[in-house]
Image (cartoon, rainbow, N blue to C red; front, top):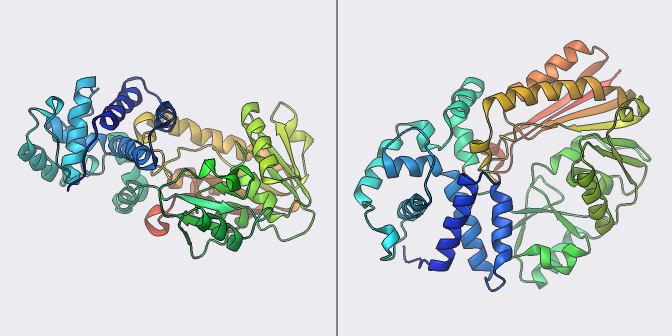
Length: 405
């Protein structure tokens, strides 16, 4: 492949990798800070830095094996980052420049080890041992299929804000900006962005005509069954408000939406986003000792977008598999059950509660719902959906809508 490697960009990728792996920083934050440093980088340069950093994070265990022949994951010294990057480009078929940092890397040995890795699934799919064991135990032979899907680059999807624009208008406005889009069948509010661009600098983003939101995440608000006027809806784990904004748009700014979280800074961000999106029916509440009891029997609809492992969104957060630990997932499952046990009281009789995670593990999903229903016989399961990355091409999600009788 005749892709030319530019030294300043390669050095920036190596610097990012060092911070991510040796300083234990989150990849998305490291890349964001990296791209802010040099305003002379164009869209192609920025894409090179972001995409190659993410790709190497995604495949680091495989690349380490190709470098050393060792199956276990070991800490990488800074000088080894250049070797890892060289292996990344070798496997992609890119010709390496004659740089001293690339001396001593034997192409034939790298490719021989790459072939050997095909017979070691946890190396070939580049996942830690504990995650491979968990995935195999919970998903069986489907685990390899899902990991293959989760190792793909995340599509760039936006959601039209119908309080500000129609899809047709948004497509035209983006086309005028030379931003190519594609509609996604089965996702009425979604547009796939096809070319590399910085959407956040556009006036239509600043004016709230769209939000960046994965296609699978866009299923959640519609799954809530918001089919009545002037409903009272609670988003109990709202975070910075991506799903709250979608809910408000589907409610057409009518009724009342209460968005809650345990972190005030997330609610502050939600309010800023709501103003930009012209959302007027949302009220934010910090979750304190009596917040839930004050809303007892209040909600027509309750969304519990529960804290989870995030194993359905590894496409966009590939470093999560290196930062997560098995004990964290065991603890988060306890938190999920505690939230269900405590928060369900906010639903009124005849109302509905939607339990959601961005995990693909049954222990966080179907099993949690089954336990809740066993302990709360006044709730029944109306519908559920498992969104698998291998089937949808987007993030992995689980949704279960329960009715309070």
